[in-house]
Length: 356
Image (cartoon, rainbow, N blue to C red):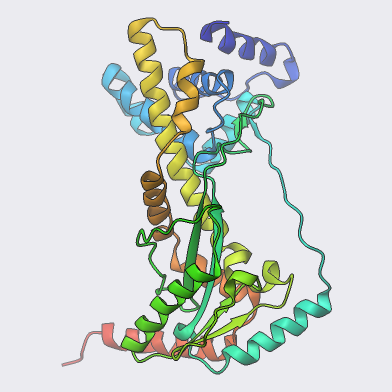
């Protein structure tokens, strides 16, 4: 089936139901048609990379190409802004949806969460906010496609790639201190965190805190690999109560989700650019073996995946980190809010012009 027929069939299906005909007047029909064609190409070749961010980025790329090829339309094209409102209307016009899969939350009693939260609150009260840390590990399947692409219809699942990294992320309750993913690579046969690796990582953190003359508390998940063989002089290690991390651990509550959203965005932009290169070469050469060129688009080496992770972690904002620390309610917010108010007043006093 040709790409023209794919797009034509999609438009015909939309027009067949008069109640769902396009009622919106679009600024640039050509931009919209090219964007929809690109989405249909991804759909035809089972390339699940289409997300809201990718659609907006691709629309902007097409807009810049059209400004060059149709200068008479440049004023109209320059006025286009691809905000979430535009994206929502674009979805409505072309019946695009995202099929999401939700995981299960482990069953845990409210009393257990409240008891664990109260105990952690007592622990953290003994430390200043910048000395309260949370660390967690997360799996990153760096060759796997997304499971919830935006499309006109449900797409067949691509073969899942098993290549993975286990990424360790750590930040404090004050936000600015994020342990950088400094590409410290260690190999394990199964790609999981082990007690030995955790011991090495913890020794590094302890040395850093000793150098800075700081005593910190580190909150970690209650798993076997997070039980070191020795105590550390400048890091007090405490574990979350079993099955409560979804509620009490800041990393699990949303920080890691933000990190993974950033890393997927980077991955999708990378694959989208490679897909465009493939389609451009096919257009130039007349080669019709597209399917054979799609699977390799997802294959990247470990170094590229590590750089994606490093960039994605740097993109997680202080606002996000503070939000999820507060969300878990394991900090004494009254004290922290008082300190923040004092810091804001002090900053205002410094910034205020001196009277002569």
